[in-house]
Length: 164
Image (cartoon, rainbow, N blue to C red; front, side, top):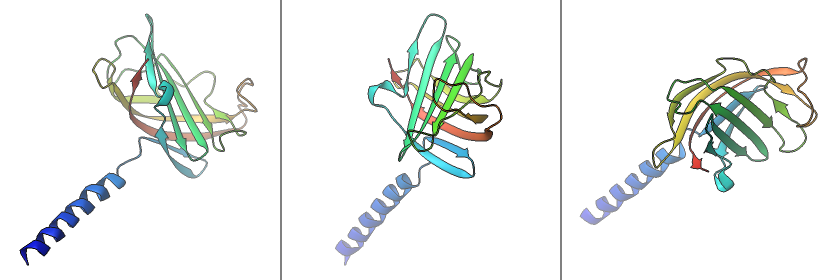
């Protein structure tokens, strides 16, 4: 009898642990054109990481949701901390991964990205925050975004970063 109670306790513990992990918030989300996307940050090849220059810390976050791709590129002041605003930023979204291409305006709106947590100095660099910015259609990455075809977009990001 005691043995079966132990097995039930172990099984319940496993369900609680793995059930909690399965319900964890996605690391990168986007609300766009009536659809919610949950992206997985792509860590291979430092696509989600940062490079430290003398005048800027360049942070890139790339996420995949099936074929859909979301990329956030942030230029942060050197020594940036939680709450600091990026010098500049770009956001691009490809819903199908190839043809449709939506990007933030060339003149990125001030205050469109809020950094809730930033740590680029520790052994485990990480960033989290939120954004709300229009995304405008463009025919390809070499074309300017069409200011007449913009839709509101918002999301959150929480991810570890690979140091370049």
